[in-house]
Image (cartoon, rainbow, N blue to C red; front, side):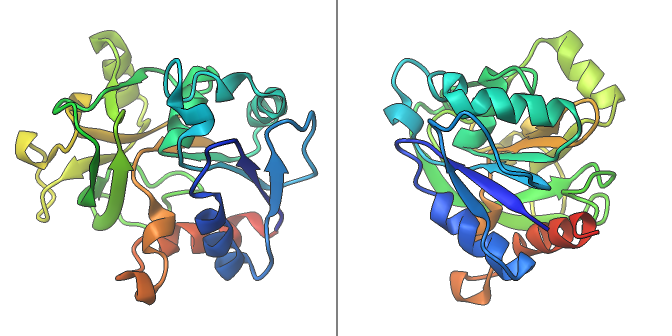
Length: 230
């Protein structure tokens, strides 16, 4: 399996993703600078977290127009899996690969803590390792993670099984108390129509080895490596 990690000015989770992918794949992913016009042959593209371009203008808005993103969009549209984490989720929305918008957190403060997620959809290369309704613990760290879409779009996402995961209580219940940022319907991650593109605000790479306090995130990278290896 070959993977590529896109690096922007202001990325700060690119190395974390590299370490997590290398542990699962048995080899380092290719780190691709945002100014490159092309991508190597790859089985997976990861757009990592951070503050691309300092989040000036709007989180992810400038990065979405980097030269390499034209190739990321092209690859995504022919079925190459793309994972966007935190700022990467924001970039994928700005690039038109995912619906909706990510607004300022409802509390207007940066939020950094572990949260509980309920896995809502397991029919994807990213989430098939988990059980439907399984609850996992993953960290978040964001200022603009409040997922918003109009009711028609939200209903379509629900009906098409494109909500990947939601913020939840440890028992899996979904309510306002378990929502850290005000996201509509507690949404923490969404898929594109083919479930080959996943944008998620939580950081699975930050809980990918015991030294970090748990391995709930490692399962995602292990599954990706296994699913895409052949």
